[in-house]
Length: 339
Image 1 (tube, rainbow, N blue to C red):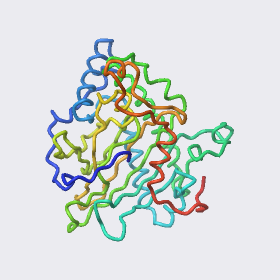
Image 2: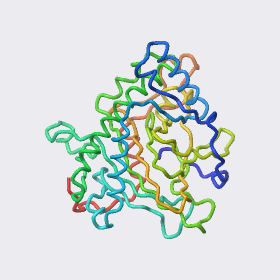
Image 3: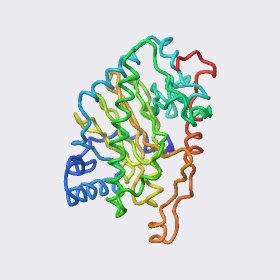
Image 4: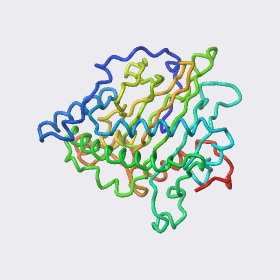
């Protein structure tokens, strides 16, 4: 979570979403249509990204069987006993793996009431970055109890990366750029696939308590597969909140900070949070698109010239992500976790 906020409006109850506020965009004309079709989809996407920073995506081409499989593996993992989940724990020097819930001694607006399992690109052992021992290129930590877990995760990761590349082209076209404008930033991207588990908050929890604090995402964009249980809430520009419930078969896409910086503020990286009051567990699977390790993200020259200056300073990707990962509490280094 890149930017967080603690304003009083965080305690307001979210209203029901209006489709006109978070639109449903059919991506199939962009994937299969002609130049005019692609431009029309890109324009619709850009309008949503400029206004609220979120939209639902259908016609994305990801098989429903693969979406179901990733949720099945997620549920199987989070239903393992605690000690077996801990065997695949992330540590301060190994970001991949399981992160425990961090509610604190008492629930508050700063609590993190969720568990997470992080997966990144599986690279060969002789890859130079893997051989270097960099924390960003450590192998994934697969749970020993689930033989299909790694295979399904890697298939889903590849599908999300391909969809992300197509979305980047649409994001570029929608803002008047060549569709390949962002490609050079994603040679070996530091993307993260996360399985998220949100227990239901206690019925008597203070109204300001949420599973995740109000925050934005670090990278250019996030592709979120929501399960069957609602809980995601999105902030309007007027400071009020709306619920963004799951739509069967659709992804929920949001702009992240780096896309806002590239666009010099044209696209909105918007605040959102999760509040699970459903009295049942909630699962989601976000894919966080992140650029290459050594990339520097700054407002694009095209927009700096047009706007008479840059609205955001340059940011080094690995440095920025390192600061984010440092905000979590990890199992101690040396935890016995299978690679």
